[in-house]
Length: 270
Image (cartoon, rainbow, N blue to C red; front, side):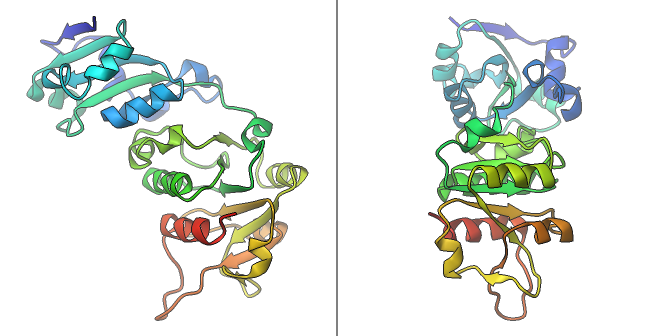
């Protein structure tokens, strides 16, 4: 039976994680296993559970206990479930719980790069993507378009950021990923050691067209995408094996990085 806790006030410190603590406060960069993240909606929480993440608590409106969340609570009978009237919960979170169910979940240690790359042919490398919505959308496209793994530079936003998880629709729990300890020098060297050629998405004079057969013929290819606005640094572009661009029409020079990633993942699939 679920451990239901009916709220009449918001003073319980266990609720801090849902609104009163910042993303930085609930995350622990040095010891990820001691940090937590927030998953929203029954679908996303289910995918996180399937991936082995452990819930600390749930927060939901009463109606979801015997509704959308019933299956989740059956899987986690000893986890505290905080519930209350909609107005009370809205005063805590600052918005109506349109998805109905939140869960604070424990983080896991990051997997080793060797484990993430094992058996892969196509990977995405995100360099300095700081917008959580863009990052989540890129991960969702990676999952949908058969990218085997995603690697993040240390300057990317947190892949388990609340908005990133939500925008990814939980695919961040399905696609293998890790954070590169050193980028670009160390990361590029590690990719080459695993047999990868690297393709920098960049608008430079010697960029190859996306449909260049040399790209499709690569057995192992890493698609490198740069930060919003500035894109990849000149040093990173020069260090990659290829610079690649998406052919444009009507005088448009580029796409949003999330849109560009979907085009690249589809065209360069193995």
